[in-house]
Length: 135
Image (cartoon, rainbow, N blue to C red; front, side, top):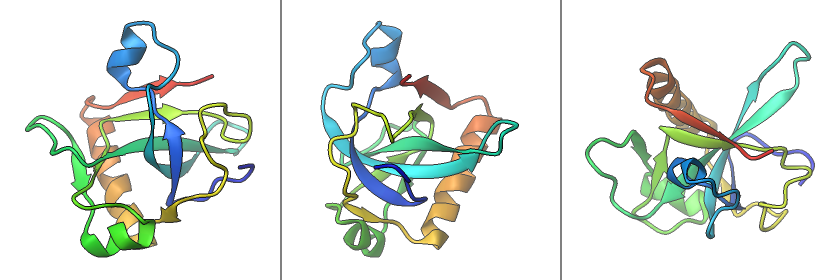
């Protein structure tokens, strides 16, 4: 994958913040992960933020966005599913060894990605989001 696209769902060996805090460097399993592109740095390059998707009901303190059935079908996900927005990985997908398959599973609509972005921004502003660097 050389050019990740905003809204794509990829299979990615996601590293949870709690695993990173214990010194782990690799995710334990590949999971569906949502790619969100943001413009970062003075060079204006796009940087992917990788948000994990889970089928496990979230705890009451988690910042999540539930995936509607129509979006799940579009992204080729099982339901129920939630996008976790209070933690994310950052990685160079063109060179990443954590990327399981270069072909995306599917993608979310722009409208749904706007909901995810708003929820992630709120978690970041509230100081509730964690970034886990992969490189």
